[in-house]
Amino acid sequence: VQLQASGGGLAQAGGSLRLSCAASGSISYMNDMGWYREAPGKQCELVATINPRGRTNYADSVKGRFTIDRNNAKNTVNLLMTSLKLEDTAVYYCRAHWISRLFGPDESGWGQGTQVTVSS
Image (cartoon, rainbow, N blue to C red; front, side, top):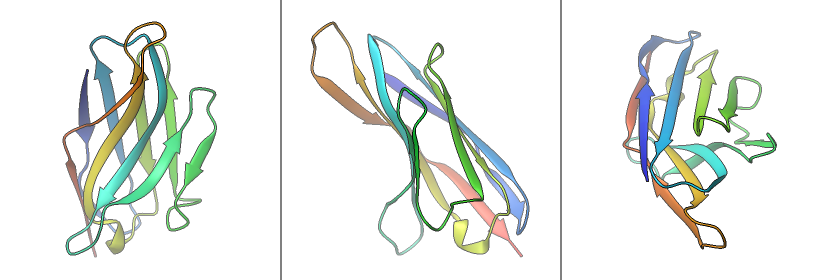
């Protein structure tokens, strides 16, 4: 299974960006999907996750500003980032958990990082 992330780039503070991630390959069932980020000199942190029923979880630092959603039919997950702040600058990674075959084990993987840079 491959996770292909897209979006990101450069935005001004207060602006918006949208990230997308598509999973492809042998997927019988897609479990939780989410986004993480790693800022320079900081540890990787959870940004937002969403389960197959649409239940979401956000880091306190992005609540009210970021929105995660998913398309279960397409195995995609998106992150709409609004009211961007300088501290949102980071490399963003999508992550997903899936089952490849019936009764198979839970597997997980990461997409390639995509840079988000917020300027003043």
